[in-house]
Amino acid sequence: MKLLLDLLCLCLLCLTGKTLCDKIEPKVITMKEDSDVMLPCSLSTEENIESKFFDWKKVAQKDDGLKEVFLYDSGIHYNNGLDGQSEEFKGRVSHFQDELKHGNASIIIRNTKISDIGEYTCAFPRLQPPQTFYIELVVGSAPKPSITSLKETKDWRLLQCEVHGDPKPEVEWQDSDGNILNAEKPQVTIKRGLFSITLNTTVTKSDRYRCVATQEKISHQVSAETDVYIHGSGLSTGWNIALVLLLLLLLVAGVLAVLVYKGCITLNCNKGPKVIKVEEGRDVILPCSLWTKKDIRSTQFIWQKTYDDQKVFLYDKGVLYSDGCPGQSEQFKGRVSHFPDELKQGNASITIRNMTRADSGDYRCSFPLIQKHQMFYIKLVVGEYFDERVKDVLSFKDWSLVSTLLSSCCI
Image 1: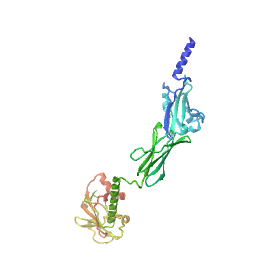
Image 2: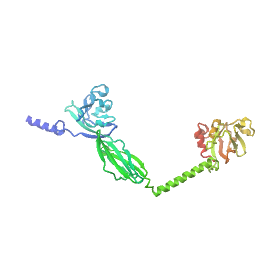
Image 3: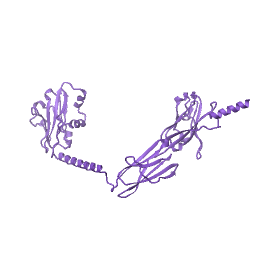
Image 4: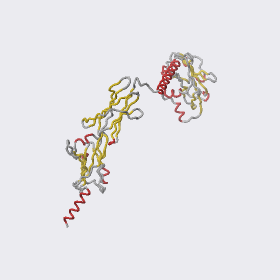
């Protein structure tokens, strides 16, 4: 009777995989090279293993011996002083300390390499009965495809795509619409443990072509592109029309720019003068700047209040109202200044200090000596209070603010 019971127990153990009668099939995990991977290992009982012993090893390969990956013994492990870890895993493996109380002995291997490929075991040799878990790690490598133009004529071009990787990549050529191109039979070799695939195709049309490498086993796809122009193929009618229109547009824009720069024509806008609001007692900047950024130190510009033709500020080749030049309206004497350092950039903006309600009105900045007399208009409103956004405009921080104000001024 005892013999029968022993045989029954032995059969049950074999069926559950807890002995060496039948090794459990390993769980396969695939991962791209240089990424981090988690190798799972958890007790179904979820018992606390903080005071237990578990050992991760990499099974010996035909060209390599057994590797010590990670060992935990009642709180002591390879990362806090325990010796014995294989050199290739040092500094790359960690466990989940907070998960130990739930029976979780999983680990993370960082920056996976092709050399990490293989079978791993997670063993609890001191449990009753002992338990071992098996993991097979597959690390895939697929550097970006390399495209080379091997030969070309005016009617066609021979393109070559070369890809190295493992698992074996599937390689194909596509055009810009994603259509798969006819290609020669791929050449496959193995170099340094990696598959090397070379795929050639001949194209006869100008287009952007793409070489795509796919590794379904690790859910990875990568591609490289190249632009090809075939002299004899020409472009489609639509592309020809678009190209001609673009060239005409660029030509017209260039001519207009030259004419405006030389003062032969003047640009006008219909938005009206730029409105600037300011509180009483504060200072304000009235912007005026040539978009050409032409040096105006040796020319003349005049600021006037247009309603009653008051003279606000005059600059005449370095001479100002403040230098004794007569004509400035009494209301603005001692209150207006310009920016001397900005004149060389075409900036004729002025600052009026200590604003009063009497300063409200329309202002004009003009350059009478410049060919095709140019004028800028500002409408100034002086009041008791304006919101914070308006207050920001009143404080001159940098010249980007002036450029913003000028964007809607009439020239």
